[in-house]
Image 1 (cartoon, helix red, strand yellow):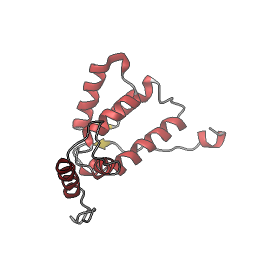
Image 2 (cartoon, helix red, strand yellow):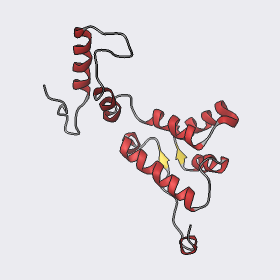
Image 3 (cartoon, rainbow, N blue to C red):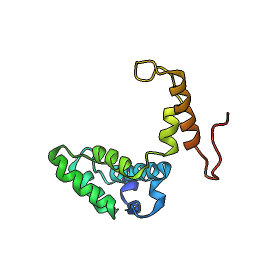
Image 4 (cartoon, helix red, strand yellow):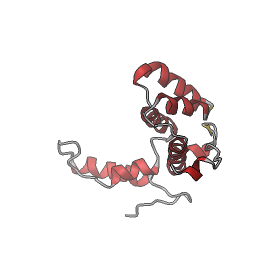
Amino acid sequence: MSKWMKDIKIDAPENLNSGDKKWRDLQYLDTWVNAIQRWLSMKGIRLESKEALDFIGFKLQGSALTTYNHHIIKEKDKASFFSFMLVLREFLIPSTSKDLLWKEWEPASPHKDGPHMGIKTFANWLEELQIKLIDKDGNQCISE
């Protein structure tokens, strides 16, 4: 970091209150995580360090903080900034997130995980994804 950057006071990113629905948006959460990473880096805190993990604990509220505390207890010395970010993402982002569903849709194949699935099973699976993938106005993202 350059000398002039050390003299600039930059506030830490906002606290994450898991009760607020904005944190259920994958893009919003990822933007926050990137801001946290940049802020820690600017402060000279390595993301692999225990300090980075400790810092995150002070930026959480609500059940996200409970999830953090459980992660710290469960993982003990194995807990890291990165391992917790994965846990936090899994906790906050619903399994019906469009991002996760698109990742299923893109590589769709009747040969899922090796064994061949029947055409009716495959068609039903595609239809289920089509129903779940809706835009913010409630319209289907995938047309027939």
